[in-house]
Length: 185
Image 1 (cartoon, rainbow, N blue to C red):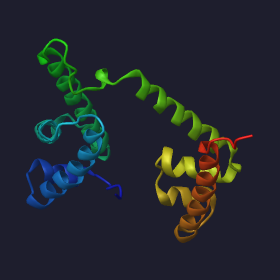
Image 2: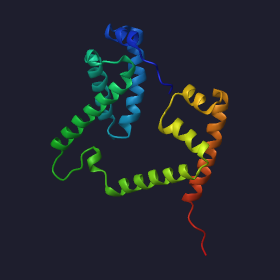
Image 3: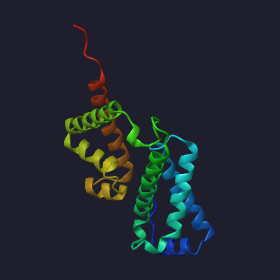
Image 4: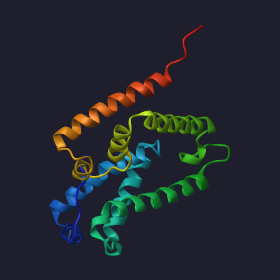
């Protein structure tokens, strides 16, 4: 999904409940929130409740937004707040001995596997040539603007796609090699 450049006019029109902007807002952030909440909650009903609550709170508190360009960050922080409230409510309301639908109930094995995966990705990135490693970090970790990346690396957008494709291919090859079991002796 392409990042949308939010500005004062967009937020003003959103405050005025402009139908076109309101539709864009709910579609754009609704999709992003859905992706985020699916990783944190398992119940469809709970995901939808939290998503609607976040969108509603943001619309109600637009006057608190000081920089229109940071609307995305504002939505994300409201989402985090609503998630925390939801986790607390789930923990409070969960019957004794049952595991509520929140991260605190994840078992330690999943956390260890996730940490091992992060370590393996970092090691693989470090093993790549510096140019490929920097490019992948800029695109996937920094999520920098494509035009900004093109300027930094001195390439066109068309050639950037080629470079990213090649760097990903090299990354996958090295990463998959690490994941293969050692040959039997």
